[in-house]
Image (tube, rainbow, N blue to C red):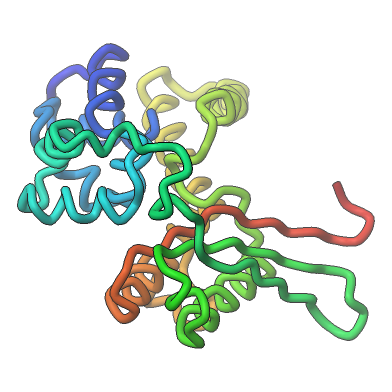
Amino acid sequence: MAKVTINDIKDLREKTSAGMALCKEALVKSDGDMRKAVEYINKRSDVIGRLKNLTGAKIGLCKLAYDEAGKDFEKAVEIIKEKGWDNPVEGDLDGKVEGVIDAYVHGTDRKLVALAEVTCKTDFVSKNDDFRDFVHEITLQVAAMKPEFISRDSVDEKVIKELEETFKKELESEKKSKDMIEKIVEGKLKKYLAEKCLLEQKWFKDESKTIKDLLDEATQRIGEPLTIRRILLWELGKK
């Protein structure tokens, strides 16, 4: 197995705008092959969202570029830059944010509320009942499963390091070997993020699907890119 270095991880992050943890996982799984690592990431994360983060282009333009590039992430980045979409004009009407914020207050005691902000491209979709039902479903998931992050890519690297240190100290106290500690820490981190990242969580109504599956299905059904931008869980008496 090829040795994965921090520089390899940083290079892959620059190419894909994916989180450090996912970049490391991709390189390990693809034995250090950068091209395969990019493909691995594209299959397991929001490609359009990462294109937007990397280039600053609007979601709709990112989708157009990705389709034009034949689903090639790096080529899509080139197309966006060639067309000048990575430097959108301030105040452009196409840059207007559309979508809704939905809230769910749980139970008759009303001590827990979940909110979700989901954006789309057009006001036509933002008024669509199917779209609004999807957004409400996200608030129900937030209330039921209490995610802390939207995706792995949204987790701050500082949080990742703190988690790794916590898991490492727990295992060192159990006098595990260094090699074993590294593998167990990686597994614990992966499991933790799968439970705490909304898009990776299993849908509480049907565990055969993840929230990412629901998002993909809604996007395909509705016919334009949807983005879960923010989530909030507020419980009485808790910070």
